[in-house]
Image (cartoon, rainbow over all chains, first blue to last red; front, side, top):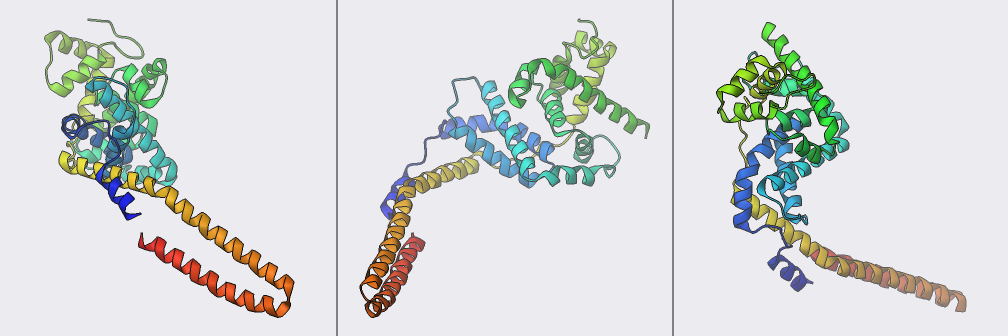
Length: 175
Length: 137
């Protein structure tokens, strides 16, 4: 029994990248994915856990050949599903985030807390859309592949969210 | 540049990229100043991108954690048939003991009582040994 365990410990499960490939990919993606996870969950510790889980699932997946940008989108797709699963398991947490942040952000638009406050006023799916479009600069097709929505529905959805956020920003400016 | 559209503009993505990189062409800047959709996209992108870039674990540490987890999962998978076999053996032993008690009880009540006590002690000892062996693994 011990021998079987030792044998297994000596040879890890096949991962889809070598260490050097992973380091390069990680340097390219870790910051954006972590920022996305923080904004979607509102919690740094949860974002750290989900980041590790996302990379693990990515490395264990049978991914078809694709370029770096495609791999990044695939990782975002995994991260998006992990966030959805996270809130599905803890339905009260999304509400708690909204309650915590609504109306308590400091003045000024340049703080992370203000961004968090703005995002807390959006539905989880709206948060995904707005972040992917206006921070990651993803195309409608890429957003559709990451979120699982139809490509044709991205433009009107994004329009509504953009209007909502722009209105929020205008109201903050007046205040 | 393209004209303004009610539900968005084809240049929004270029505007978002320009906000991110800080590299604006004169034409794009002029367009963003006139197009309502691009103006809003510019404001929203600038606002959302204003947050700090979060710190991430070092790549080597992350790789080590992921590889360790892959090893552990492989080890757990390798041991699964053995764990199942152990549990099956424990169940079979229990069933055999019960069968023995019933059979001896049918021969004579005194013999059955004695055999019952003996098999109960044997069963507890065997179960404890299996549990102890499992916990050591």
